[in-house]
Image 1 (cartoon, rainbow, N blue to C red):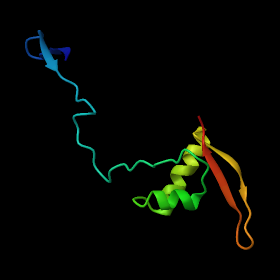
Image 2: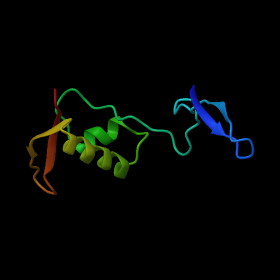
Image 3: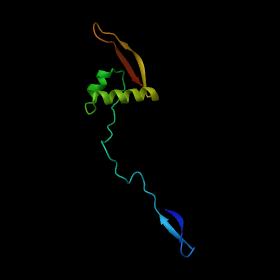
Image 4: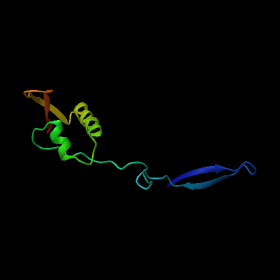
Length: 95
């Protein structure tokens, strides 16, 4: 609770007024709920991650993956080269 002084214009007197700030935990959040990613403990590719997290779309998962790479939560370990198609990056969770 914060105490402010309110000045009355007519009487030129001050009156204390109690103001309670709104906590962020008390307000209801709007929009879609946050879905957390289940990061594997072993080395993984994006396809492994996509199979493990069916609640998220692949574009949302890629966005969260890029964010973790910039934060340092994930590390690129290597590249998996297949006989055909694009090479796949292998990632690991940073301890």
